[in-house]
Image 1 (cartoon, rainbow, N blue to C red):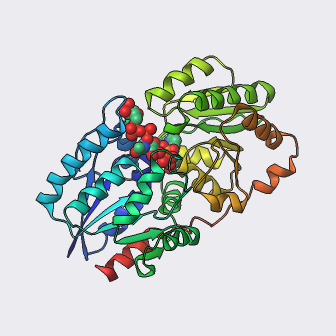
Image 2: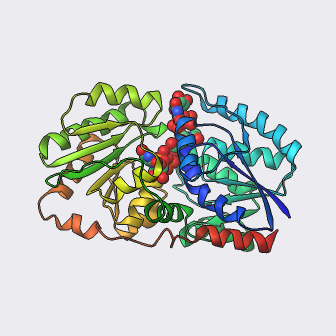
Length: 366
Ligand code: UD1
Ligand code: UDP
């Protein structure tokens, strides 16, 4: 039996790893343990609970307003102790967070093989997203198994000299998560959505957006609502205090904008599936919206989710107020042909079986 340790710490990692954890735990070939860094607290706990996943180890590193160096240092120290005690045969990390980077680096320091889920995403602008582009490039240098969600991701890795035999195209486990939440689970809460209103979902949380860009995004949202009387906006406000402060300052009291505590994943996916339009800087939401065919304005100048842009479901608007407002107004115009062309579900991020593929590969390779 091979010992696999799955390291996670933030909301998106939990959402994308829980379907895989479920699959790995069903297989007698593996002894699976879950190691949480606790980089997020409420948002991580809520995502794990939705999939009935309970970490075996919890480093509990989150502090209010933590810096990147704080989190990295705390994880490196605590992960090393756990790895020495547990001696797994493989450490699995997902994506590009500090948890993924520091988890992989800790395993590398102890010469433990690393599997990277969602490998090969790139913007090739090292500060966009910040610090995630650096994290994902760095993890690729030390990982042994690269689970690329798409052909594009595999091509990126090959171009960087990663050996072909260590790269596996699997689809993105986020589509597995969507399949579970939308078909197997009941939302904790359902809004009574007025039939005469179009639902718009807005989220923003990236570090490189803090300051002027996030203010511009919020001002754009206010203008969009003021000029389009039939939209109703749901804005789950990320727990980061930087986001909360400015969101309240700019949007408090604006009619038809509902600022919410972030709903748990099952509730959020059900709401997303009913949305007319999404405005976001989130990575995971770009993939989910592409799978569901919900037209999405990406409030960034570049995206590593280039497949969703090519499929036509995502459009980049940058983070300037004017660019966001004019694109939203174009898409919200009556009978907008641009909007209709974007409204098409796409299988580019997978078919909901990525976890099975990854587990099969690990059975063969380990
Ligand atoms: C992190 C990831 C980012 C990912 C995002 C998902 C890094 C560098 N960034 O960014 O890639 O897109 O998670 O949401 O790893 N907080 C809470 N409760 C929570 C979660 C966060 O209070 O449940 C607050 C804390 O004050 C914390 C702050 O948010 O200090 C920032 O959290 P952090 O994980 O450092 O960064 P994120 O912006 O969430
Ligand atoms: N999400 C959620 N509740 C919310 C908003 C988002 O469960 O209120 C989910 C969303 O469906 C997606 C993930 O959180 O799966 C994305 O996380 P986030 O945007 O924080 O991080 P990113 O994907 O940008 O790294």
